[in-house]
Length: 491
Ligand code: FRU
Image (cartoon, rainbow, N blue to C red; front, side, top):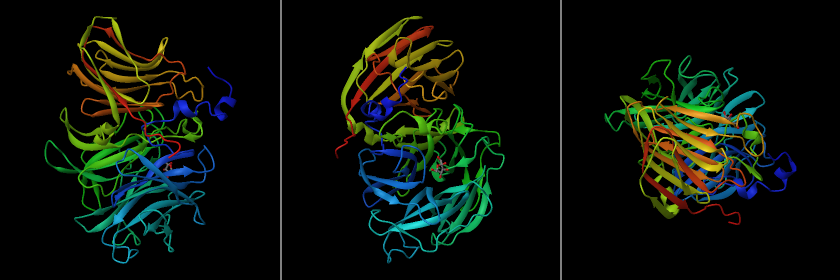
């Protein structure tokens, strides 16, 4: 265990933990993705940013653009705090028909965000006439005053075709509110949803709302993801979602009040947001950290990363409507080498090892685990430690276990995340996207995802271990893809 805090400031952690296929700010603090939008051939990623420190503080919107959602160019800060307060989370849209009148009849970008002044949270807008490079705040901000609700923030806006209006979904305490507008400037309260619904332990934050067609039934549904700042299955902040219908004003859930659906079962998936204006697919991105320790993760000179962008679809899984998440197809462009291993059988307590490439890499596995059996895969191993992925057909859970980091920065870091497994299924497909300080796990077609930071020991053994802890396991396929890095500090 390294106790010396001085190591944190002299760059010791810089190269080791810097993600190579995930977005990070070049330096300083980042949290939620904001203003995700596709416009004129570019994907925009804005983010909660504190340019003067590696700790959360006066929030700005940092900015980056990409042509493929994988390789990002860093741009100057887009929005600075002002007399109305800090710039908290929000979204951006393409105003195609110039409903706002900001763009002389042409399409342009409008950002909708929360102005936070002490405990006073109000909604404001800004616009850009030059593809997001510079922003003008609307001179009649705020566009929605605070109605007396302390936590009143994170507007997500979209154009609702059927009613030909803009719709905003906004977090308001432990529920969400909906507003509508003809021009992004004047907003009318429509309804609210959520009191007593789903997980209520934490305050609701960063809501989203978008339609998806259920691929099994062909029905159009509305998906409402919501961050909660406490009470997630693995502790701390996490993301739940509701499925229902939406008529432009009211959201009607298709579930009971008690049902809780989790978008991700890991410890580090928060404040997810979907991109606006991408034709033909719904892509989300989340902040890869947890408010329990976000301010203390020992990286330098930056803090926090985003997940790999994921494409969402909706389908029936075991008779239940479920969101499916897949890493976007563009990620495969980074593959440099592919290694395939022969199938093998592991008797009880038998194990086998493969060499583990330097991160980043993807490990895909097909394993057959008999009823009552337990399979364990281990990455970044060191003696008994490492990141352990367990398929347990005795308890019918899949788990990811994370042990102590070298620098003991938070007692919440050590954890075991769990997700339920269907007890009748014996064949499992696993995809693990491994970077320098994170592992994103996708099970099956993506019906379960578990996203976790992982800070490997400096001298971890470069071996991937597979073990049958109980019963017999057949490893039907194991594929390793070595990935090209997108981290270029000199770009
Ligand atoms: C979620 C959040 C948002 C808020 C922002 C402030 O992580 O708390 O609700 O707008 O972060 O940085």
